[in-house]
Length: 363
Image (cartoon, rainbow, N blue to C red; front, side, top):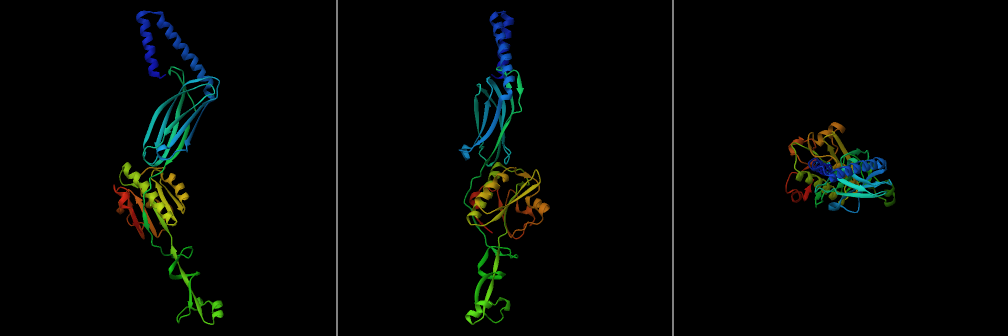
């Protein structure tokens, strides 16, 4: 029973007793007092036997994403009135909601409370049951408990088709594992082609062993290493507060672009920031599993006005070492002041037609 309902009933009984003096009202008041004392004593004796555990229901995804709070009474006494505050927060959008929950448990009994953690937006969901209290049956006196339960759950963004065209360029470093099949270069550790010697060829390119077998000079042309320094910058800073639609779009675009690159068997770095803590995160992504591990961290903090991800990265690690950059943000291109350089594509998540407009991205 709720505290308000109990107070109303007691007030009515007291008023009836004062006005009529009827023994019926007196007996009712005495019975309520006995119920209060007895159930409160039962709650005190059983309070150390109550456990609260939270877990994610892995059987569902998306619309069926559930977090389940399990309460178990290990006492031989019943617990008639348990109250707690159930809180749900999307740390990416900042949306929060809470409600009071009530339950009762039989001796050695259990009960579960399921919460749909999907608020219709991608993000890291934090679900917790706190301020748990054991009350008498009337809800007038309560005993606070330290027992709490919490769980986290990530609502994944929707993914739409994005075709990223990525032209590899010659690398200044020879520490690469991708080489051009069409053009020779300067990396002698890999052979581009073998051909007959021509006047003007460097003598160091002569393949002496093969030349001795063919009775003519043969040379080895070195290969051209290709630059694979591709970065996807997901900037969670903004010049002004952003709408939920833009927040959803930023998450969806980042994941859609990442999936497209993985399908093309291109490795890349995902760089994103947390404006509130002034932290920047970087992760190498090659496979879908890598991206799946990156998304929860990406969706942990909200888009907030502040320093850009690029500025924070430079202040923390120095210049961004990338030949090609896809920058997904809710800011205008002018906010980056040409800090990225090279081959850069800016993807504006504020566009209402982002899914259609960014179906093709050419670097």
